[in-house]
Length: 375
Ligand SMILES: *Cc1c(COP(=O)(O)O)cnc(C)c1O
Image (cartoon, rainbow, N blue to C red; front, side):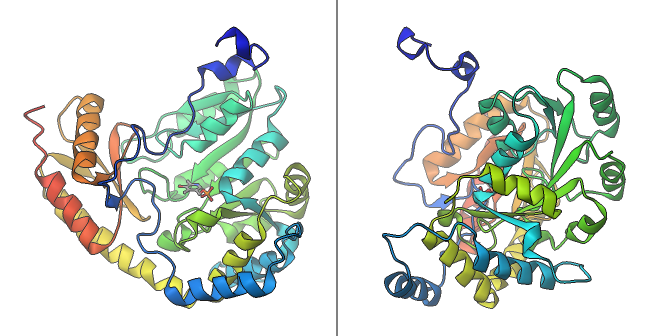
């Protein structure tokens, strides 16, 4: 780092900024299948409602509601209805963030900052845990996954036992995992359940609406577990940056302490409330996405170049059958991009978001035409 920036922490000089679209944006991109967003914008009806509400209800000169009260009530109702819970979820068990990314950062600040702890992740997985930890100077302990992408539990046990400088304080898992699409299995859940009170277990359910599998029903018995959810995927609100956490009220209190006071703009709070009210208009697309995912899966399975896995989310993960991976995959990613499809090259494979049928068909054609032998 240059002398001019000598006031910057030295460990940040090694860190690259997160670039969702490496190599810059090309104008010819039509099929953006790299960030697991919903392929469809909000319905016109909901957009008009939001525009109207902006004019009538939002005072642009006032700070947003820093308590997020109404939004929390709407979230509590939705979670209670959709999860296997016996009593209505209290708003004291919910914290709202500027995307779940903010909640991840708040959790890191609240648990590991200042040399107090390390985090454990099993790769390939969502990259933000590691990136955010690094920006805070928090060590990241990485363990591998098995052939079926479930956690390597022996490696996990060993890491928890042996790493003490600083010890692992938080385990991050995604349920179902990104980029690989697998939900947690019984064996993994048992291991997470066996974690002592001094380990925080974060279960990121960003793809809950697609998997319909959740551990929220477990939270009453697990004071050291926290569930993260987001409006960025099935609810089609990636532009508005809204995520939420569900956990015991004491842990939620700490998250509320750590966050910025006005972390969520009024318009984003409004958009999330309206999306929840109108969920019968938004969520049916989930079923279509799942049908498309199964169709695309079956077609890719027939392509001998690729190995593809079943997924419980809105994306598929594929690897090349018999080729040295990353250089070739980088070439394929570039080649697809030149034709107008963005996919995500990560963890030694390609993650393909399920788009509209048209987007999927174009992308399937482009993948079928990939010539691995020529590379
Ligand atoms: C997309 C995604 C999120 C969502 O992050 P936001 O900040 O809410 O947009 C969180 N976790 C995982 C695993 C994701 O894939």
